[in-house]
Each structure stands twice: as C-alpha cells, then as structure tokens.
Image (cartoon, rainbow over all chains, first blue to last red; front, side, top):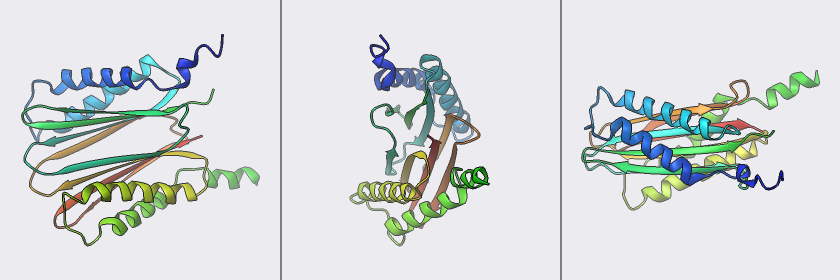
Length: 114
Length: 113
C-alpha cells in the first residue's frame, strides 16, 4: 500500500543516466569543441537535465554537475564523496566523448523529507 | 533568543566551508607537480578530508563534495552546475586552486536536512 510505493524511497540511477545521455547527445552530439560556445553548452546541459529529472520525480533535491574538456592529451581526474542517507539518496555519473571533447555529468539526488 | 542562535548554527556559511576546502587541497597537493600515478589518490584524499572536516561542524546538513584535477597543457575546461533545492537553507561553494602544473576545482553542496 504505502510501503509498496517503495520505488520512491530510492533513486533510480538508470533512468537518470538515460535522461542525461539524451540531453548531452542533443546539445553537443554533432559539435566540435569551441571555446566561445562551450559555456553555453554546459549551461544548457545542466538546465535541461535538471528540468527532465524534476519532471520524472519531484520528491528530491537535485544537483547536476557538468564538465566539458577539450581533447588535447591533458590528464583529468574527478572524484565525489557524499555525506547523506544511503537508503534514500543516490547519484549517477555519465561519461561521454566524441572526437574533440570529453563530457562528464554527475547527478546527485537527495530525498526531500515529506 | 533561541531562534536567533539556531539560525546561525543551521545556515550554510560559505567562508567557513571555503577555508576547510583550501586547507584540504593545500594539505593534499600543495607543493606537488602533476603525476598521473598519484592523482587518483589526491582527489580521493581531498574529498575525504573535506567531508570529514565538514561533518565535524555538526550542522544538520547533507554534503556533496566534488573535486576535479586537471593537468596544465593548454586544454580548455568548462564546468557548470544547476541545483533544485531550497534557496533559503541550502548553499554551495566552489574553490579554484592552481600551481605550475595543474588546476584543482572543488565544489561543496550543502543541503539542509
């Protein structure tokens, strides 16, 4: 009954991951790295991803982080750590690339206490 | 009186968090040059150290700490974040640090419980 809707109690990272991949593909799928437009791309990716996620499940606070890096041989390393409720909260990270750039998007979802 | 005190203890204080981050970064990589074999350990140390100091503050917050380390070789890097949260209680802080061989960007997001 109420317990049956246990899906709301945990974050669906696969669904979020798919939504994020679609966002990235639609915004930079066919593009090459350009310094003058990259800030618009990152802004669009985080906004669209956030809008999609909020439409899917409203009972979370969300943080969407996006990094786009030009492919030039430099090393890049990212790490996250979270201090939260491991039962209800969750995250997912999507790594995407094309010929000229890497894109890493992380989504963090923190449950809203009803 | 009571409400005034709890207001200060339960807000996300950017300066306080920023200081914690800077100390964590300095402690982990200050004085080091970019080394591919060690960068993994560095990012882990930075996020763990930051998180442990933040949780010692004892505030009713959930925290998310992210850290990016990039080698300096002329590549462009752009990052953006968007957040769906409670503007009155939640907050974030980003610290950018660099030395001769690398950039380090650490972001902390604090969400009130």
